[in-house]
Amino acid sequence: MARRDVLRFAALAGCAAFSSTTGATGMSAEPKADEDDEFARKSGAIDAHVHVWTPDTKKYPLAAGHRRDEMKPASFTPEELWKLARPCGVSRVVLVQMSFYG
Image (cartoon, rainbow, N blue to C red; front, side, top):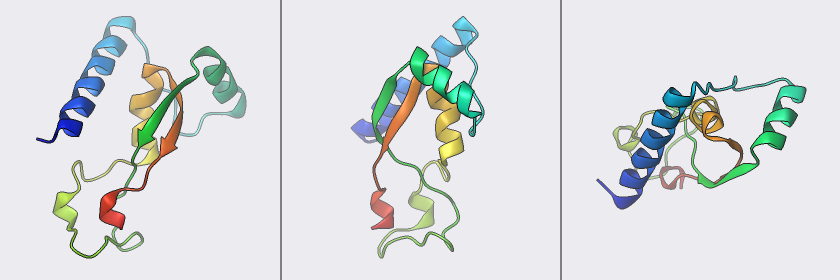
């Protein structure tokens, strides 16, 4: 397992543990504008390096030399990202293109 994977899983595990002990719950992937504004005022945390991807390789083809089975997990859509990020106080992200898209 790569160092980045270990760090990511450790961070997610810590966030999950925090969420389960504090009763924190995630917001929907598409909150109402007033909910989103309130959330941003309360947290303000920014994840400065985020990748998102979809298993839909027909609509978003992989770059030469990359295979679908390399995508682990198989999907990490914006909705899946927010489900994990918001309970941890993240209200904004910086998207970075995945290497398997070229």
